[in-house]
Length: 249
Image (cartoon, rainbow, N blue to C red; front, top):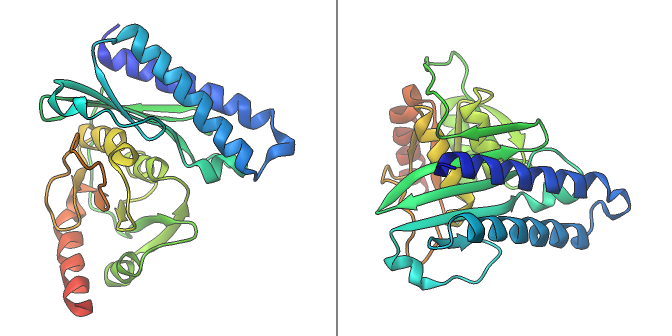
């Protein structure tokens, strides 16, 4: 299999595994046990498949010890076996599985599986045409939108659309359900690598909130902020973020 085919297959199958676990665990909804089981079983599956099909590649995963030999590797798979454990454990559908590949300095592919709606988004998909929206819709956390994002929404006169995991929010921009996702609440590389690869391939704008590029396979995988947006909104979003930041300093 080509890399993109492998990524799509294992993300889809991990998502199907998680969906079965979720559906068969009605008596565990809302529990820590269900979160842990989902993380553990999806990690075990993805690890087994990558070891079988790409044994020479390095892996960076939320659910595994970080082997810093990846820093000198030419190929590193960056995975989140279950993005949105809270949503998963609550029986919701707005969670995801992330599989991305970093090669020689940059992301080369990404897949985001959305088992709830039964979708797999890939960087191998065709880009789409984007137009300037008449009303801006901004994806935000269901419970903890940061003050900067709240102020940004006011600056943009944007409609806030609460939803679950990071990957699900980024995928909502790719799918055209919202126009931007701006995050400032802290994340790690596995939270965004696959969604960013998919978003870039779809023709969306991506960056840090100060406009710097998002980079991956760093020694410290903490990557606390990002923008994924309709490309026609990029300059306006960056400008409004600067305004908000200057006011609050």
